[in-house]
Structure formats: C-alpha cells, structure tokens
Image (tube, rainbow, N blue to C red; front, side, top):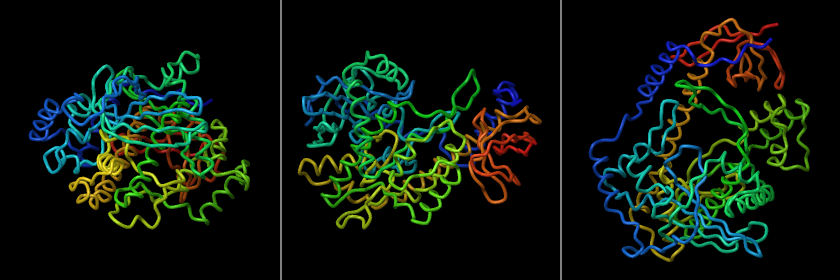
Length: 480
C-alpha cells in the first residue's frame, strides 16, 4: 500500500521550514524591504500621478467594461481586458498598467527596480519589484478605480487574427476582478459576462493560429506551493483552460509589440533559438520508446497538447519536452534587428510587454511601442539604457529560478519529514547520471534517486530514507 498523503502538521517541522526559507533569502541576498528614499518617492508618485483624462494627454476609455483575471487574492493587477464580438470577428482591448507614469528614469524607484529585475515569489511571501503603494495600489488595475493604462486595441477577423493594431495611453475603469477558478466556472455554466464568453471564443482560435505557425506554448502541469492551515502543501494540476486562453491574449500582445519594435528598428525582444536537430531526433526516439510515438505529420505543439496528462509515460514525455527548447534570453537592438529574432516556442518574434508591475523589461517595451505606434521619438532614457537590460534580466531570471527551485525543494522535504521508512509510488521521468529523476504520485515531489535502474515512464515503489529541510534534500531508495 502506498503511504498516506503527508501533510505539514507538526509545529516543529513548520518552524524548521520557516527558518530554512529565511536562510534561503539570506543565501540569495534577497532584499527585505525598500530603502527609505524609494518608499518616500513611491508615496509622492502615488499622490501626484493623475488618472484624470482632462489633465493629461490620455484618452478616456472608462466606458469600456474592462475586467481582470488573475489568481485568487492577487492585488498587483497588470492587465485588464475587454472583448466584443462583431459580425466579422471581434474587437479586443487590452489594458496594461501605466507603471512608467510613476517611475522617474534615473531616480530612486528606477535604480532599485534595476537592481531587482522582477518580482520574486517564495512560499513565505513575494519580494515585489516596486513598492506596494504603487504596484498593489496606485498603478494596479483594481476594480472600480480610475487607472492609467497603455491600451492595445486589436481588430480581429473570424479566426482571431489581428487586422488592425493601435496603442495609446488612456484612463480606464475595470468593472470586475475575476479569479481563474470563478471565471472558468461561469464560462462552463453558460452564465459568463460577454467578455469572458468572447474569451472562450478567442482562446481556442489563437491556439489554432499557434499550431499553424509551429508554436508550442504548452499547458504543462507545474508544481505550486499552496498555503494550508498555517503550513503548505503541493499541487501539480494542469492549468484551467481559461488560463491558457488568457495567456493567448498576452502572447498576441507580445507578438504585436515585437513587430512594432522590429519595424521601428529599436527595442528589446524575448528570444529563444530553435531546438537542435539532434535533440529533436532524440526526443522523437524517446516518445517511441515510451509507447506514445510522435507522428511525423503532427506538429510538436499539437502532439504535446494531445497527450493524456494522467499517463505515466506522458509525464515522462512532458518532462523531456521541457528541456527541448533552451537558451531563452533578451536581445536589445537600436538599428539593425537581431540576426535571429524568433522565440521558437512561440513560433514568432515576441516581446515581454504585459507585466510592468512585476517585470522590469516591460516598462521599456511599453514606452518604446507607444512612441513608435504614434509616430513619436522613443524617449531618450529608454533608448540609452536598452543595452543594459539583457544582463539585468538574465541575472534576475537566474535568481528567480534558484529561488523557485530551492523553495519547492524545502517544502517537499518538510512535507515528507516524519514519514521516513514509508513507501511511496512514483513515476520515473528520465535517467539522470547514475540514477533517475522521479515524481512521487502523492504528494507530487520530484527527486533524484541514485542507482535506480528503471526506464522513463515506469512506475516504481520507493522508500523514504531521509529528509533535510534546511538543504531541501530527500533520500529515496528502490523498494521491491
């Protein structure tokens, strides 16, 4: 019999995890708060920046019934959308928080944001890119508040292809804040408001357009840390359909931003090279060995989207697929565009431009695109600092990746602590050096088991031999 599901219960274990996560922050030299001058500047900006269309060159779009869709409890709301169906397709308005209005280039908030690069997420709380008075209050697209925004407008045909794209600064007023779960529920029940109903039209069509261009932005299950009665638990479920549809709005916008910057010959792209031919061949051979061959006449994205996510073999395939596309980075340019502007997993040039409250580079993309789209000169500060962004974002991404992986490791060790000696069922994801990478069935802990000789996709029984919360390591051995 497999072990009962571990839960983080004993107070001692919880205290050990809290201490371990605090050590991790120290190890990664993460900031504990904002310097006094940054907070003071943020307070002044929150009071001074106006969202009155009569006092600035802002369009008044408050009559459009925008809504936001985010994880439950979110307060740093970067995006709001409105989709209206037409006889020939739809009109999509996509509002992005006007963070640049609150940040003076070269001043305290800007300097601190360049040090951080992005909002960081950990089990014991997030570390925001900007002070909360801006990112979760004055600039956040909260409901029933007048807010400044960069508003993209897309005229779409009956296949959700953009026929016309414009971008301008405006004042908007979101009408409702939806969680993914609640939004999916009303769509499934047939009681969704018009924009959500139209999103259910838009998303699947954009996925079809993605397949046409060879893209593969996949709805791959991810391990999430969830607060649970004062402790934590792990969840690994496939995202809801609406999460994928909502992501397609952001992808459409990012591709439009890339096109504008490439045509204007200045900007910054999110790039990723195509997978190496040898890696693709090896992956195709692995799908054959696992009994779910990848047909030659089916695209990579369509093949992965069609997998049964409950199959052990499919888990192994998805794990291998995650490593097929590597080398994501940023390419800044002022003049000649990058030699290879493609983001291979998306299948098109692409730019990060829809999350300025949480990601530094988006501030540049927004101001550059808005200037180019309206025939004005790109702000000097943005042009002169472009070249510094790839290094800043690479460093920040590295910290975020280390924090995310190490946080999950520590929560996994805490969940299993006290269950030493118990036997767990697991799926072998693939061979790793002198052992194998596995995922326990419940809880969804991923670990390496030294000396395990079992093929990818195999189901095995493993005995827990040790846990170390402070280092985030667990010991497992094969159990006959």
